[in-house]
Image (cartoon, rainbow over all chains, first blue to last red; front, top):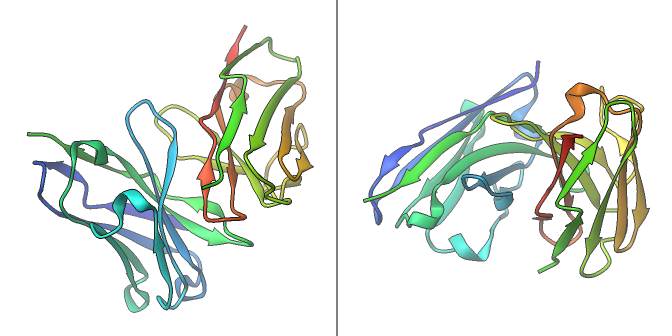
Length: 118
Length: 106
């Protein structure tokens, strides 16, 4: 079945970095764009970044521009989010999701938690 | 940025009743509107896309309507498993979510 599994989260100090991963299975990963979405504790959903199926286009929300980088390795069926210069306000569960149709998200992973604290 | 506003924040409904959730966009998003359900500790699940099309496996008691700036998610005959938080999302101009509506047991 179609599945996305995130990993790489953890507890880090402000200013440090992490690389989040999302491994896809059950579908042809290289055919589909992918999103990262995050959710701060007790808060709503926030779109973070998107990447085209072939990696040719990447976009991110303003609050993470210059700090977060989305990428993918289609040979490994894996999506990445490099998160640098972390801030307390980046504390959230980070979900990867498949881009479908005109841009909605039809499959989600279970998320990986990032906590930024000194 | 297109701002999505959901109302009410919390909706108290008895099992078997109908729930009506609203979502308003700050500018037209045409029919580029999705609804997601999220239960505690779980990832969101796609319910409706293109404003009114049910996703695969979603029961017929879930229906979506609207276009432009005003949208509605209706859940008829609420079941125990439907008590959750619901988010609308536009994908017309980048991607933004509403703040969510919690449907709780009355």
